[in-house]
Length: 104
Image (cartoon, rainbow, N blue to C red):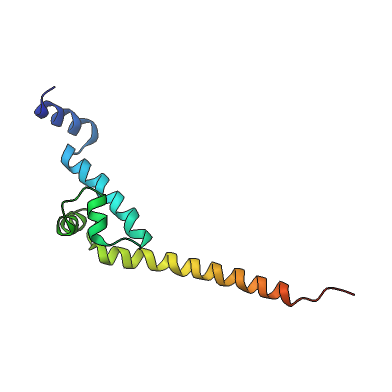
């Protein structure tokens, strides 16, 4: 199968070109890494197959409509807040149970 024929068949089956599909899959991987909040944009770019952070930024804007930094800010903060609340709730429960005195 020639590359051109493959591209036509791929687009007919998926509704997108092979290049758009690859970029979409890469951006999904970028989103997952950004949501962890622990990896630099340069590391994310390399891990997801982008040449550099600038190429990643342009593709991210094209696909998601926002910058990677803004996406991270919007998606990491709520998770961290939920984790903090869960930890605080567990800590309070532990404190309450340790304050209870055994019955005589």
